Image (cartoon, rainbow, N blue to C red; front, side, top):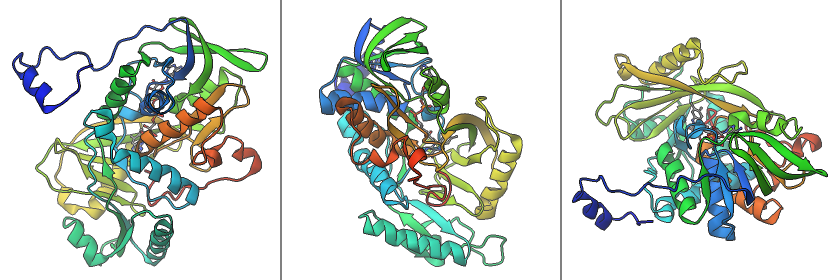
Length: 416
Ligand SMILES: Cc1cc2nc3c(=O)[nH]c(=O)nc-3n(C[C@H](O)[C@H](O)[C@H](O)COP(=O)(O)OP(=O)(O)OC[C@H]3O[C@@H](n4cnc5c(N)ncnc54)[C@H](O)[C@@H]3O)c2cc1C
């Protein structure tokens, strides 16, 4: 495959950019693989890439029922950060952040990762104490984090309203300067291209409809394109994890909820960081196209419909204007929803299942985009060795039996 470079850009300019080779091979599934990954979102594709790159396992297929990256990977608000409170989460998300920092070079694909800083606002005395505690906990874990006073918040993000007589006055905030955002599609396409280059088959429009077992062990998958034998199978299907796990008679402690986001009309650069607030519950950043990217919380009900309720949008807009009255006359351009898989402790499940050679990576809920490279890295280790890496060992399915939960419902301000 041609390496992307300034030279290849120049060469293709002579043919009006009409002669670029496809970014990845369009593979049809073969009869048998060492590893089959169900789900061609960012996490599944990253797993395949690191299996090939780090573990030399290339007889791998990623089976995706639609085109790759059109699940939550292509629907999220792209916030990347590692400021999680508990040690287990901090280690996992920080592994991911350290991979993000070299990802474009590693994949030879511009993921547009922009470390513009993530600001989490505090709106009352309790928030301030919690924020300061979080800053200390993060620093003890070697993760960059600072506490900003009200005036420092204003200096960092001048368009925030810090007047003291509003309903939710800003008292201060925490800042992770290494946090920021990335281009979601580019993450899926970059991992797909790099995995395909190393020999992985990416099979689109290939839906898994059954998981075949013999003697308590997985032996293959039934798909819309026929039966495929597999040495090991990894389920990485986010909002549909419960459905796919049920094919192997596994009942997951996961609920699927709609989560929506929306973007405004594009405007000139006005906000050059990510701002999140738990009290008003909104998060906002500006895309490279100029659109404000705005998100909120999940709809309370469970559903597989990829759309959310109007009252959530109304709340989202109200919350946005609490912080940024300057946006009051902005028009919204489009809105969409994804289906997120939420566990009881709001932490992911990454590891073995009760069925031999069947592994699962799910439960990322509202915040898995930031983890994409780290999730793929640890899951590839788990699939390759049959054992979890030290980083994902605490995230085993069995924690719901032992009670050793990792409660991240507070997850550094809002859900994402
Ligand atoms: C509106 C919204 C905003 C969000 N904002 C953020 C954010 O700012 N930051 C953050 O970190 N996270 C965020 N998230 C969460 C994040 O998007 C997800 O946690 C993450 O993208 C999950 O990636 P994935 O690869 O596991 O899932 P997906 O990208 O959903 O991939 C799963 C794939 O499995 C496929 N699949 C399902 N069933 C089958 C089957 N039977 N056979 C074959 N394929 C199948 C699906 O088609 C899908 O492509 C947000 C999510 C939403 C919806």
